[in-house]
Length: 427
Image (cartoon, rainbow, N blue to C red; front, top):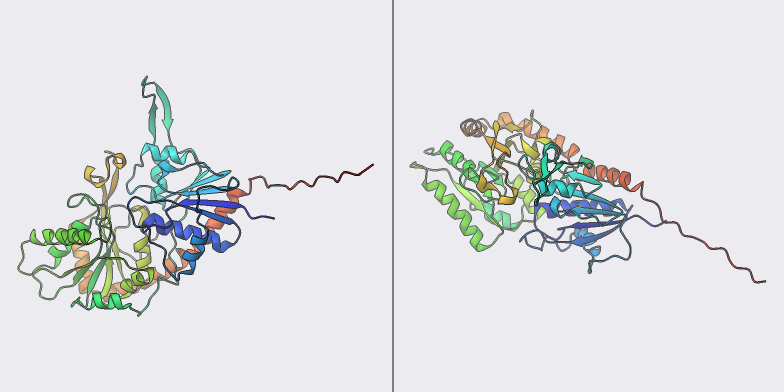
């Protein structure tokens, strides 16, 4: 009996969050060996199309299944579309849309419409799922202004987390030559590490809140001869020289805005790292804790991967990352839900009533300082969080749940039956 034909349309070749997610979904389907997997690779904005690593067996298996032409001999039994929801397309006999949603509380109407085209929608977190389930839009005829009812999510939805691979993300003392050289430039033995893009928006408006996080850090440890450092593994649109220059400019502008004789050291780590090098960075002896003030996440994958290092996590327990940040074992930064500034998102994704998380900056400052001054009391909690997440939010756990979802949706697809015609007898 032939295996069910599963077509995955996704930005598998791109260096993006959706690219990482797509590669994991494809890898899980391939490893299950229960489906005939075909892949249609699509772009993701302007992100580079060079994510596949030479010698990586998982990437090689994915590349083998990428369609050279956008066509198949027959209709897929299942189409899995991993893009923004307004692009969701019905291609298979059954169709699943995958999305991280949007990083605030109100998804655009076009995204809800896209989800309603699918048989099932899979979100990466309870937060992103709730945004779609809670929103309702009035539908009106554009010409007559006639009331056409209410637009809301009408199709089934589930949550499937993005699992981290414990074979890659784990405690380690290994260091690549590239990282060894970069960290040799860092004089401090106690560093907080921030990992994430520094996106559009004025001070306090960028989605990761990198600007205010940097400002609070500088204010907390200014004029102290013995202070920790902050490492910012960040970039904007990519890893170009212009982007690096822009990141350094932003850092220096914030430093110049603070009145102080001495400021703590801030290091920019800019450029492309492999998954193994990202894990090595998380585990470097100089990295003592992971820090983020992020306003909103669809899931927050880098933070999950960082938790596998066993270092303390300082973060707001809000939006997408709340699913894997165990309150007892995270260094929680108190937050409140606030209006999303208009500059934070492109106009088509912004809504005047949308909310996201904003850290309480004065309290966060005291907590960051306490972690530095009383580090030992936070280490055990970090180890507990690592063990919880390795057992609960691993790639294998994600793969098992995904198989159950796929098997459940394709069980109702009629099986193809080969007809055997009777032989004609000669008179």
